[in-house]
Image 1 (cartoon, helix red, strand yellow):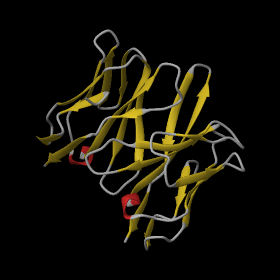
Image 2: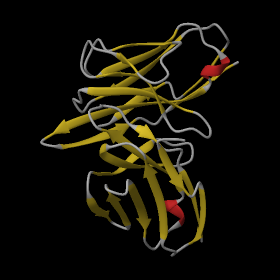
Image 3: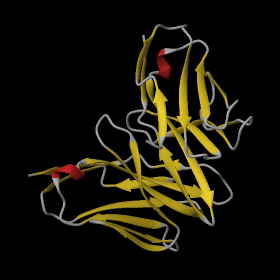
Length: 109
Length: 114
């Protein structure tokens, strides 16, 4: 079993829909990261969370440390949101990240 | 523009050839990392460095070597390329300041070994 599991693996949506991507992990962590990767492109850091909730524009990330679960929400989705969204966790006392396999999101006009 | 720059962006190698991938960052970050990304798998750590002159093995270090002679540069070497090293390679750097920290990734190097 992977230490970081994302669901769904693939997601399609119509423009304007509310999107939720989930991440569950099995290790104790000091932080969780959400990353975005456009097709053929580099990786961009969206959020770093250690507790609670963060918001940036139409993106909202939440984390529940007790349940070892995080969600990434996109409100009013747009075709330019089409990308792979990657969850990564930073276990306690390490300088390293453990990555999920990503959720591929496609938003159609 | 500030960030992490990887060169080259694409490369095709023949089995047994050698090459070096360069990662440069201008943000004065202490930590630097090399990852590989393969279909259906999360990014896996090859080697990392916690400061100039230091390197350490990650999850999949075999077949690779690294050097961090200058703080801003982190080099990844393949001494004798194998088809199993066909992958997309990402470099990243990270900072830690006043309890906050984050990662910056390069745009990737797509390597094919034939």
